[in-house]
Amino acid sequence: MKYFFKQIKWLILGIIITHSMVYAQGLSCRKITLLTLNWPPYVGQEFPDKGGIYLLVKKVFEKMGYLVRIEFKPWNRIIAIARKGKVDAFFPVYYSKERRKYFYMSNPMFGGPIVFLTRREYPLIYWNIQALKPYRIGLVKGYVNTEDIDHANFLKKDFAPNDLINIKKLIKGRVDLIVIDKYVAYYLTKKYLANHISKLKILSPSIEYKNFYVCFPKKRKNSKKLLKDFNTGLSELKKDGTIDMIYNDWKETLSKDVLIENINN
Figure 1 (cartoon, rainbow, N blue to C red):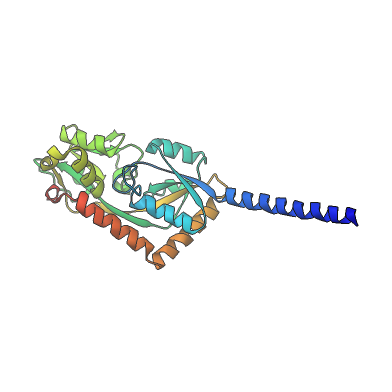
Figure 2: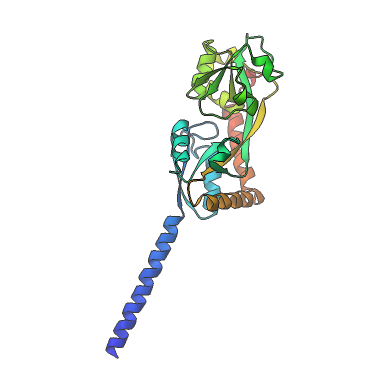
């Protein structure tokens, strides 16, 4: 009888250990790593909540039970890592057919208008892509712009590592206009180049409104599962009003701290 109870004790202990291991493995499987870049005012290490899009993505994954780690890296480095399938996902991303060859793309999140920024004294008027042929256009290396711009081989394209350098090149006259998100232009100009605000203007109309997406590498086995879970969580947070709350809070902060009325026409 004593032997019997001893065996039962070891059996129960074995069940507890096995259950703990399975639970721990389950938790580890729910840990994910995402990559993003400093792209204020949407994402930025200087913000308390790291920006509206950062907060949105984090909340969606947490809603679905994931433990999320988000690392900041340069954009080209992010793309290189993701193409090799060495990260679970990255954001924020504009939609493109080229990216869909390598990544699954989530349902859309909020985004912003893409515009041409130029110097105020330049007599530039934008009405179609052909009208831009004589001008030097500043773009950021690795960014998706619009299909027309990205596939127009006749344009004089000048690439920079980031938006801030592009704005500086514009101010110095090294390019005639740049392609940039309107709110990114507001933020960077006000924070880093406030003395030059009066020299710049945004051409009307906007080129295009761009939503943001999360990208999941096709080389990773769990990507379809993560994509499905993210889209489900995004839908649930839309229904309960969380997405609207994040967006409204972000827009309110943007209006107070970033908006520059005199950069418009």
